[in-house]
Each structure stands twice: as structure tokens, then as C-alpha cells.
Length: 448
Image (cartoon, rainbow, N blue to C red):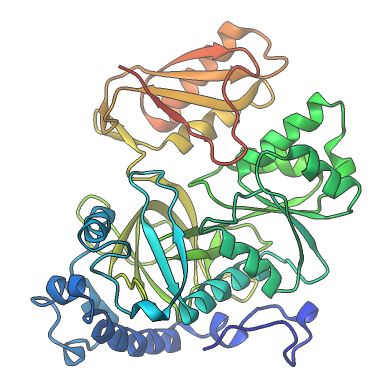
């Protein structure tokens, strides 16, 4: 199960799948493979002090695993445990399972949800990360003929491995990074690049940059955009970006503790396909009861991951906090795995009485009023955000020509109440007054 490199016997431009043997494996055969790998991995992880203690009461050896459902008998792993593990035994923690000499790359997480943590990779771990990214980007239709500009601050961060995914599938990569929009514009206009890898927020930032400069975004010649880095984005945002740039936009999903992009959307745009077959085992659980859920169209739950081959910091039943909706099982593109859309993160969501609200869902409703609004919002909450009272104050940035402000405010409040079932107090603010991000947008601001 080695990484696939360009130059193998297949003609890379003509392949529908990056790794056909695994990406088209029938679900029954995939489960057999996953069970085999899981048994070996659970024996392996117990060499770490962390899992030796954590699993000693629930895992009695591979003989106790007769099917994948038996994995549900094992305890979850949460982010706080990893931070405490690394404090106790820095830098990689008590869950390090390989020797120091085997570690060949070290990253730090961004620390978006707390203290940054160290991520170590062995040679084989790195190969698996690159393989996941390669499958994800290939599914989106990227091929060796494409020139991809990356606006991600990837170099020293986990996203740096995404660059190796682009290289591996044969694309010409132009890694510009954040804060250099003029250089990105030049890369398209003068260098004739034709694809962009960024966050969706940056694509909107680039669009506004072009409009401010009096430039038609279509002159950049962007044909494909690949988005990641933000949990949950809206179809209204996709439509706006695709129309403005005359391009096709798809999304991908990864997470630092598990792997770079291992969910990737094909050009059917019906959700992200799971692309980590044979490397990662995904579960779906109810975020409140933590009971396992079936992978079925329409199911909503939290993603939980178990590494099947990880050597340095293998995780078992790691709660991602990503809340997703299953948009389908299998696709006309030929991939039989589930497809998902991210609704938001459980550590971002808040409740108004008994109603659970994701900030990304609020942005999606507001986005229905484009171009009367810019699409930028700011939800004002007291900390912690688990419970708040109605009406929830929300700043909504006007578009360049919002029309009647009173009517617009009332319409947005009515739409939020009708679709999300809570009352909002909308304040319309001038175009350009809310902060923009060249990386990840923050939709919530905590106020006292």
C-alpha cells in the first residue's frame, strides 16, 4: 500500500482515480481490509504508555475483535488528553509509539482551539499523508497539466504537506503564501497559472481585491479552485466565487492530528468523498449521546477517526469535533465511499434555548441576500458560547448597494428565525467595516 507516484504504467492524465485499487474497492472488501489493519494497529499502539493504560481494560487482544463494530467498545480520545500527554512527556507525548530515530518530520498545530501541539511523522506516516492528499486533489479533477497557486501559509505548518500532494500528482506548484495578493495576481496574469488552492475566505478576499482595483476577476484565468482550512462553507459563497472567476470550486478536509486532506470533493460537487481508505478508519457518532450512527444519506453526526497505519502518534477513536451531514453513499464518479458536508464544529456551536446553532449556518442564510450583503458576518456572544439568550446580536456587512436597510435587516432576521429557529438582532454595518482574512475567517467575537 505504498504511495503512488506519477510515472507509473498508467497514463496519469487519463486515470479517473489516483489509486484505483483502493478508491474503487467494494465496501465489503474495504471492511475486510480495515479489520485486518485495525487488529495490527491496536496491537501496535499499546507500545505507547498512553494507550497501554487507556486500553488495558477495554481491549483484550485481537481475538476480541471479530468485526469493526467491536471498535465501539474502546474509549474515545479527545484533544485535551493529547495536550496533557505532551505536557507529561514533551514533545510528542506519552502517545508516541515509535523511536525518536524514526521521526523524520515535525509540525506544530495552529492552536486555533487551544495550546498548539506537536505532530511527528515517520517516513511511512509522511508517505500516507501525501497519498491521502493526492487522492483528494485527483478526485477534484486536478491533473499534471495544471499550474496551482497556493495562498496557504504552508511552509512550517501541517498544510506544508499539501504542497507535496500537489507535487506528487504532477502539478506545477506556485507556493506564494498569505499576505502577497499582488504576487498571486501576477502569478495568474503574467505566469499564466490556472488554479488556486486557498481558503474560501481568501477567494472572497481576492475577489474584493480585484473589484477594488477595477479588474474583472475573469482576466486572471482561474479555471479551478480547491478550498480547505475552514469548517463549513456555503453554496451561496461557491456560486458567487464560481460566477465571478468563471471557475469550478471544490473543497477538501483534513485535520492536523489525523492527516492532511483525506476528504475530497469530485467535480459532481455533491460533497467530499472519503479518500483515506486503508490509512484512516472513520466513524460517525451522535455528538450528544456518543452512540455510533450508520453511514446513511442525511445522517448528521460527529466524525471520529482511528489511524490504521500511523507509526509516530497513532490515535484511536479520536473525536474530531467536526459535525457533518452525509450527502450520499457512492457517486456517479465511481467512488463508493460516503460523501459529506461540514456543518461546523461542536466547539464553535452555541445553543439558543434548545436550538443548536452553527456559525457557518448563520453565514449561509445571510449569504442568500448577496449582493445586498457582502457575505461577511460577526456573531457577538458572551464567553463561553455554549448557551446564549435570544435575540442573538449579529453584525451583517452591507454590500455596495444594499437598498432599503430597514427592509434588509427585517428580511435577514425573518430568514434566520424561519430557517434556524432562533431570534437574531441584526445590525447592518458599512461595506468593508468587518475585518477580512487572507486565511481563516472567524465568525464569532466574544464580548463581555
